[in-house]
Amino acid sequence: MCIMCERELWGEHRALEREFFKPCKTCKKFPGTSSEGTCYHCFAIGSTIDECPECAGKPWTEEFLEAKNEIARTSCCSRSKPGSVTSLPALNKGHVQK
Image (cartoon, rainbow, N blue to C red):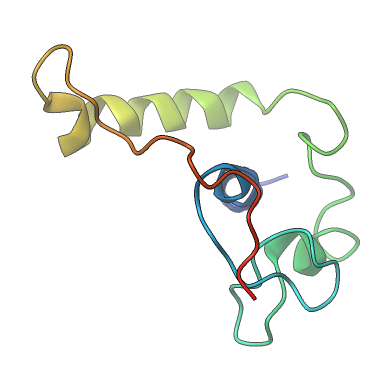
């Protein structure tokens, strides 16, 4: 699996934890963010990859995790004051926008 596919799939799992969203027209599980109203899982699984690591209970690749951590270290949010909150709490976990 390429790092871009892994990033998109990881992002969909994180979206479930933090925001309201319009569900995918196909699976109704992840955000339907494409122009067709489907999620990246429905686009990718079976077409470009065999499975999503998180859905299959497997870890994300080391290459992806290293890239994600490097981006987090160099982003503007990581330069905030010590002890400050840099991300929103998961208040809306699992809520679906109707």
